[in-house]
Image 1 (tube, helix red, strand yellow):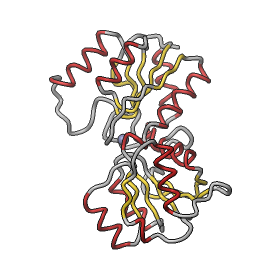
Image 2 (cartoon, protein in one colour):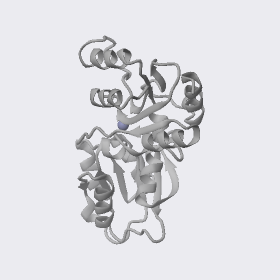
Image 3 (tube, protein in one colour):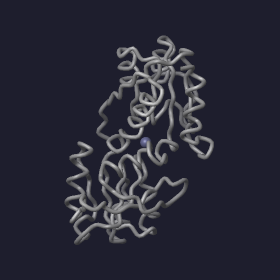
Image 4 (cartoon, helix red, strand yellow):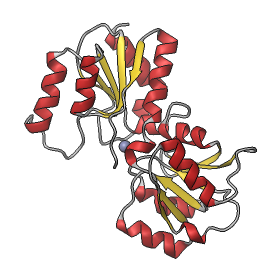
Length: 253
Ligand SMILES: [Zn+2]
């Protein structure tokens, strides 16, 4: 498929124009004009770029691209090395940030809900980025302890559980937003959640949790954002016949 065709398909599928993002969504680095093999991954780090080159990819698809608002515009240090590797190998880099958190089936939040067996009951915050749900029949979390152990085994990551001791009985009102969504905690509290699941947490959320009686489960930024880009890559492979490989570059944060 032509690169520009894929770019248009993804722009439409992920509705990139809908989002005010702090990163450019779409083609960030131009490579070969024809696309055959896509490597997907969470972040366009050097490890992923090198692995994609080794895998013979002509295209990398990520959630976290190279360019963010407020970062230095100079091509030095790690930026120079990553760009040099991409350009020398003629690899396209496509990145989708908020559109890939929010997408109703391929998004990180949709995939996280599916992984946990949650039925979506609503959204909170902007752009449907905060999700609300309840355990589906048959996958009921009797207690918050079961929810925590389910998260740890499905995400293969330790959960930092804050104020979970105060949540007694069945957990039925769960809010989640993948990655670095600690600032969404107050909106989750306002939306009536008993527990909020995200990737990262900051100092002040500990106090908000204790003082509002809502539990905060920090499950890892990387660990909660591995599923969207994978689902999108699989979809592109099935729908358009690309070769696709997800490559995980582990990150404990
Ligand atoms: Zn993220």
